[in-house]
Length: 472
Image (cartoon, rainbow, N blue to C red; front, side, top):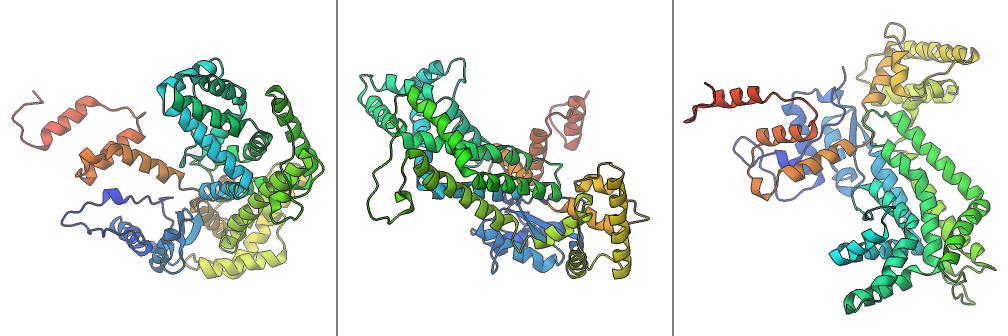
């Protein structure tokens, strides 16, 4: 038996400070959050022994070894393993590129430019007219919607000429505040360091943009998520290996734009004694920016991706993934023994015999090897593998595949529900009870569902005695 809920989304807003409900303390520690989740699971009469996965982001309140919410939940849910949100981890890895000073500087400059236009309707009107035919406005650097951060960088790069043209017009205004600020922003943008960094960052983000959308899908299993991350790591490693050729193309593209904008391409001032990495000696601008910008970005992202996804904490999930047909045909004897040991250690609640499991694995591996020999395609994800795994022949493997399906890949669905709750439970509705809040949230989320208004009125009229007769 497995948990039917893939993610248990427990919102603190739903627990009322009424008699009959637990009173929430004014602090939010990991232990308190963990206890709230366990209490909710018990309230829904779910068997805690069948809880096999905990999906959270990577904040310390959740994953702290001493007092984290995950540790507290695992005290009651002995079989649950921590399955970190792949989308959060990917976003945090991308943010490692901001450790490079050039990237950190242009992100701040882009934010200032966007705020400059958004703070004034007059400036925003001029920007919209300048972008007419391209895009009506620019996407802000949203802190929570990561896909929009990608789009914001791409839009800024593609509309760089129009943005500079608009700032030049504002710098000639009689209004002192707007003109002086526009001139300062022009000086920050119209230099080779900004342009080259912008094009370099866009090149790296173009790899992760599609993955960021993909990892938010509802029907996405853990094997697909790991394959997606492995593909990203492989692509970035190839860029690092062929950094000279790839950065040459980036530099030539940015060089064309700088030529059109009359921006000088030159090396920054370099001291004789090197005390920082950005002081790396180079014979030409292309070599300099490749060493101090492109290579550090790639190395930081690769290192962080491996640390987050290929670490010891994810080792259990990685071992279970070897049962996916695309992986099982390449499994070694040592890894097969490790898989059996892992199942005995973490999933002992599944009743299976060690020898029968090994026999099933031999049959499972032979089955897909024969299909490969026939030139047919084999499943590369868990959902398709389950369809080809009959319960009579492979009872143990089928249960393990169900575990892989149940493990949460992302908490994006829960994050979206939080956004809905924030819109519904405003300050004017602070005392709304849980039943009404849940009903409004369901109406908002499932807005495409057909609703019979007559049935709603009949139910409302029959709920209590009213002075006004709704039903005749």
